[in-house]
Image (cartoon, rainbow, N blue to C red; front, side, top):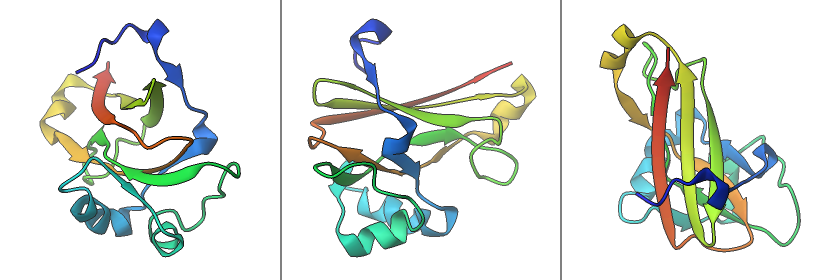
Length: 132
């Protein structure tokens, strides 16, 4: 895990990434099995971010790993959201939510994202947390 001195990490705008829809997650996870980041084609983009508008020209789109705290339905906890940060060419994907400690037994799930970046990440770090 990288140094998490948050003053050293710059947050990406929420308009630059989108979680992969639940129906496409298994395919995204399969593509990410050997690498934490995969550059996406136009066809891939229609599968993994079908309704998302590309933020700006000049950025490339990538599929990257993420994790989340699971709700009862095995989907991301409804009180949570993803945030993405970078330090140089390293990317950190964070999922935070609110919940009760008795919910922790639901565990974590893999939650790939599509992200638009001016560079290909050298390292991708993932983390999640739940506050009571």
